[in-house]
Length: 50
Image (cartoon, rainbow, N blue to C red; front, side, top):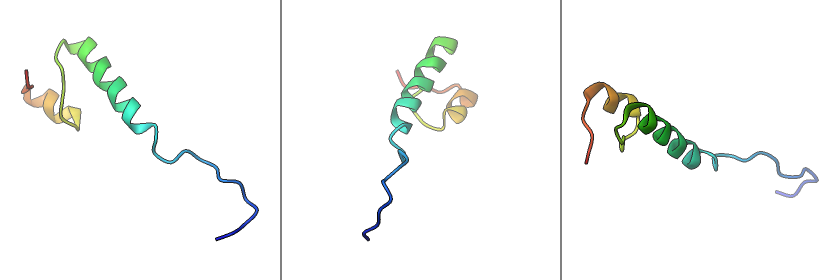
C-alpha cells in the first residue's frame, strides 16, 4: 500500500534485550540463574537448572 506517511514505531525489537536485563538483575538479586519465563513461576517454585 503506497502512502506518504513515513514508517514509525519500533514494534517488538526491544523485548530480547529487556528479558536478558531482567534475568541478569534477578540473578544479582537472588544469586540464582533463571532460565524459564515467566520468571515468577521459577522464583516461586525454587527450581532452577544448573
